[in-house]
Every structure is written in C-alpha cells, then in structure tokens.
Length: 241
Image (cartoon, rainbow, N blue to C red):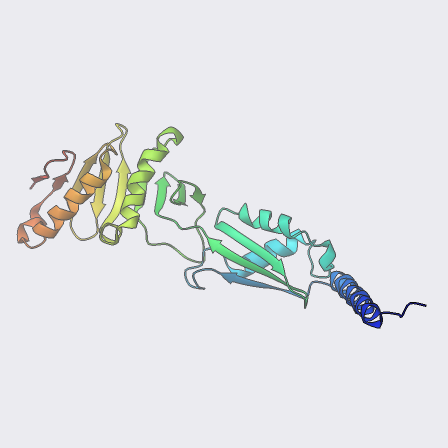
C-alpha cells in the first residue's frame, strides 16, 4: 500500500480554505451597503467651480437618491460617465473601498477666457469647450467678446491659449475683442491704449513683439500717452498717441 503524502493533502486543504475565505469575504463585501462618499479634487480645494455638495448630490441622484444601495449594485462606470459629462469636470475617477466608502477623485476644467456676447456668458477651456459660470468661484481670466463661430473657433483659441500660457500676458491682457472683419483688438490691465492685433495669424511672433515693446516702453513715461499699439505687422510695432 502506497504511503499517503500528507504534505500534498495539507497544501490542498490550505488552498481550499483560502478559496473559501476569499469567496466568502467577496460575497459579504458585495452585500455591504455604500457607507459614505469621499470627494477630493486634484490640485487642492481652493478655487473650486463645482463644490463637494454638488458632486455629492449628483452621485446620490445616480444612486437612486440614497446611500442604502449595496456595493454590488453600484455601477462605477456609469457614475464616472455622469460626472465626466458635467461641463465643469475634465476627468473623474471613482472607486469603492472595502469598508463601503465610495471615493471620487475629480479634476476640474480650467477656464482660459470668459466669453461674453450680449446676455450670454460662460468660460472656455483650452480646447474651446464651454464651462458654465460658477456661483462658488470666479476665475480671473481675459474677457473674450464678439461673434465666435464654430468654424473659426480653433484659430482664436490658439491666441487665447498663447496668452494663458504666458505669465506676463495672462496678467497684462484683460480683454480680447473679435471684430466683424475677423480682426482682434486687445486691452491691457495697466494702460488705456488698445492693442491692434489683426487676424489671428503669426500669433507667437506678434505676442513676442508686444512683450518686447512693453518691456522697453514701460521705462518711458510716454507710454501713458499712447492710444494704439499696432502689432499687425510682424516686423515692427507701430504706436499712435
């Protein structure tokens, strides 16, 4: 009669017990009700367009109005989709923990200009997507005015992005007006002159010329007398008093 290999039997029993315990804990965890919702924002809790309460209410609404739902009944993908479709949210990641908590990590959209046309007002992000105004926070960004048609959106957003990416321009430029001709006129924070930009072409070159002009002219008290600073011509800056 062959000897019984107790070591192999012991390993099989241990494996069986581990599988049983794992299945039991998984089943029990799935039956656990959602305990609470923890919301965090990438980049910190300051300057929030969308509040914890707003996100909490959106999630509760998708969960049927309460947190008594079982974890196994929670569709994390649909919750993420609901939040990602919100115009103030760029990206959202949702996951649940063993203790029954639901966690939502949120990245807000970043406005680069505030578009104003008649009674219509909203922010635009770097891709030209609309962001509603928020009662919770107001971003300090340039005001974009005029008719902005979808077919022309791209070229004007190039200009807005270049301004937003540059620390000096972001602080200096306060207004961007699109004329019916397609030309652009801008205003600055410190002086009364208008910046005649022209069509949104050779954007980087024109902005570079303006920065060079300002850094030189600010040393001259005559800058206060300028009425126009024309950067339409890429090789020179023309000023009018």
